[in-house]
Image (cartoon, rainbow, N blue to C red):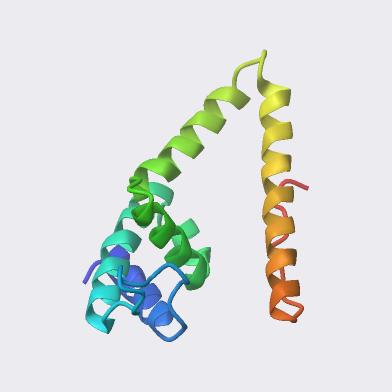
Length: 137
């Protein structure tokens, strides 16, 4: 088993230990069969690691990987393509003198949006959780 395959399997096992993402239900509103959920995660996670690399993949919580995968698939979006596009688009905008500052402001706004969503989720669940810190500062 390669290093990437091993990392994918570890994340799939970890994700399978938690509750499925809210959208991981069949059309009838029933949860996906365990085997189907595992297959979807394995395929999606393999695409994610291709898009972000093994180091960043390993740093992602399995729940976040699953939620991203489920939403991308439910929206009929390319899991790897979204990540590659975000990275390349940001790099191109940031590397262009005319859009350099705007790109950085956009990134900070995106991080603020993530923070607000996490705070809202924790409040709705009646818990206080840890939130990721920005790598920008």
